[in-house]
Amino acid sequence: MSEEVENIAGEVIRRAGDARRFLIAIAGPPGAGKSTMAEGLAEALKARSESAEVLPMDGFHMDNAILIERGLLARKGIPETFDVRGFLDIIRAVRPADQEVLVPVFDRSRELAIASARVVSPEHRFIIVEGNYLLLSLGKWAELEGIFDYTVMLAPPIEVLEERLWARWRGYKLTEEQASAKVYGNDLPNGRLILANRRPADITLEIA
Image (cartoon, rainbow, N blue to C red; front, side):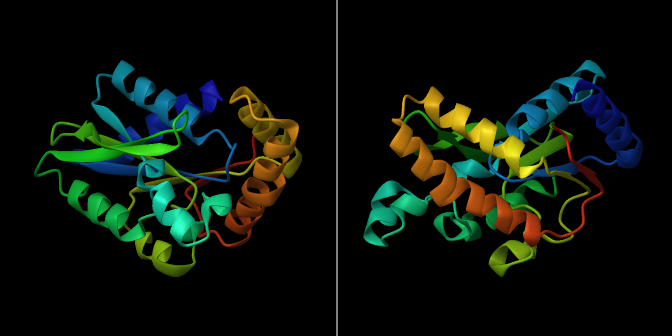
């Protein structure tokens, strides 16, 4: 993936020209490698003397207490379990590069979002937004259309996603039954939803 990241870094710098703020979206199913690519792209841009920050969509997970109340805890991660309005507000606040914006970050080990855990400052030229539903054409997520300057869709084969998701949940010491519920009851169905209902991206990577 490193060669792809370097190519994307060069392309976004070219497209950005002299813009003060340039928003990049990295979207894809669970397990597609979005976080890894986002961090790698930020480092590649910084290596070229650019300023960059990553803004993860996962920080906008609804709290477990709300999900329990709504009967959605087992489906955490589906589009309806995110604070979409709050996410849209943050993206719109970040867009003009005229103020410091504090954003939440999700702590997967504790399954909760930490408020104001990352700073997006006006000095950050490239903002790399990463998350499952950035290119989803359904519901309020569709309001993101046109807000990003460059979009990347990661779309590995389902069997690759399945393998990565099993490794993820086993890494969190889940039992085989618990991991299976996460993979087949939630993550892979979400992945299929994303792949079937995505807006076109500037570049789609079907990386294995």
